[in-house]
Amino acid sequence: MRKIAYIFLVLVLMNGRAWAQEGMEMPAFSKFYDKDTGLPFTRDSLNRSHQQVLIFYDPGCGHCQELGQGIAKRLDTFAADVDFYFISMQEKPLVDGFVNMFAPQLAKDKRVKFLYDPEGEFILMFNPKNFPSTAVFRADSLQLIKQFDGEGKVENIAQYLQKAN
Image 1 (cartoon, helix red, strand yellow):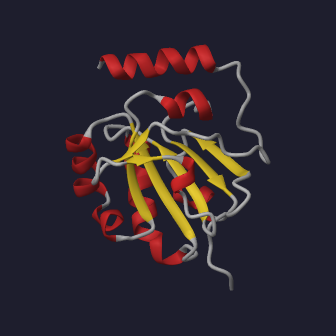
Image 2 (cartoon, one colour):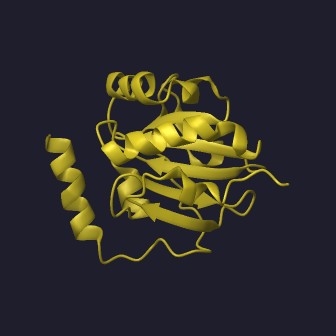
Image 3 (tube, one colour):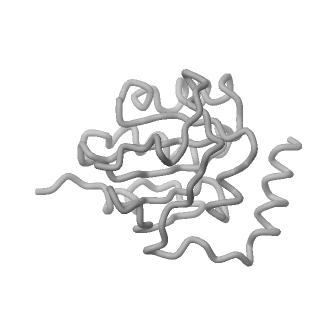
């Protein structure tokens, strides 16, 4: 409960900062960890030939659960060169519960990674307004295409991730 209160306090304090403008370059984050391996995961770890979708979420958030389910159900409709990074400040047991209960398909897809953000670096660098906060970035240039805050409906995000017809 303390972590959640801290998150909202930081969000309120950061509310005046306007980072998330389309065309801005992805910040050079460096303090995330791969949930499964425990290894550091930085911006340099990204596959620069793939489009990037960073999703800051809380496993207990209803909109986050809805978005996770929606992405899991529609993975086959997204382009093969789209990678999804689910980033949480919660530890592995809570994230595992989220995945097992709401979106087990995500754990089986090689385009999906779950990252642990123990220091709240996402909040400081990406300026989310609500959970989930989803940022879609171009491949190679890592320029922001669109950021969604508090949006649990996958349909709005999906329009940026579709396979070419």
